[in-house]
Amino acid sequence: MLLINNLSFSRNDNIIFQNLNLSLSNRSIAQIRGKNGSGKTTFLNVILNFLESKTGEIFWEGKNIKKNIFNFYNKTTFIMDHNTCTRKMTVLDNINFWSRLSSSKLTKDEIVLLLETFNIQKYQNTKTMYLSSGEIRKLELLRLILEQKKLWILDEPYNHLDDLSIEILNQTFIDHINKDGVILFTSHLKPSINNLEVVDL
Image 1 (cartoon, rainbow, N blue to C red):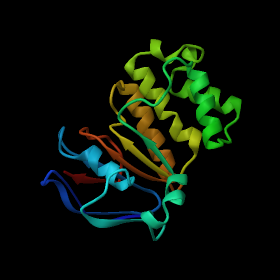
Image 2 (image 1 turned 90 degrees about the vertical axis):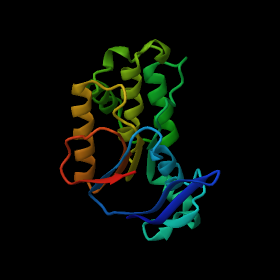
Image 3 (image 1 turned 180 degrees about the vertical axis):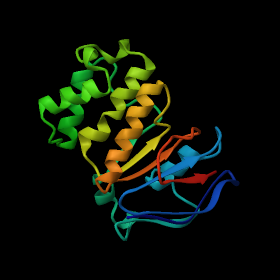
Image 4 (image 1 turned 90 degrees about the horizontal axis):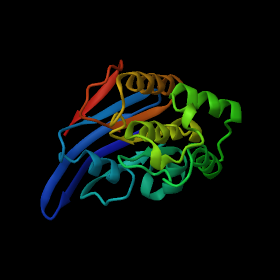
């Protein structure tokens, strides 16, 4: 499904990573692990075609993403390590905006249940500028369910989450791969997820 072949990236003649290979089929989950500054975010940016690799190719559904970029993006939800929600909008306004943008098929009742699952239902009418870092992170992660995409790519998804929220996210990951989803994420943590493939940078 997602094939990364001989991928290398350099910046100002400094090698950030080189000759990385990864193959993820349906029902697969992989973690890019490394200390701060090891190139985890850069690796994701190369995969997403935001940065140009020095060597290597990336394939999605058997096609080079450079020749199939719109289909690749159409099947991918990317959760960055910084927030994308609009601070002056309420939690519900942000969710409604993302829902319209992705043509989400979730009903209002399903969205309410989603808010309850992530324990932020009481903030639905609160502007995000008044939320804690953990609450905002959970709001960002709701996009995974809202957008209903095949491939999830996440940069440091566990940042600012408490233990219970980490358990919820892990179960969300498990549910997605059990439905033939594919997940690639970066983290310095060691989450408790079965059959997790780890690539160390």
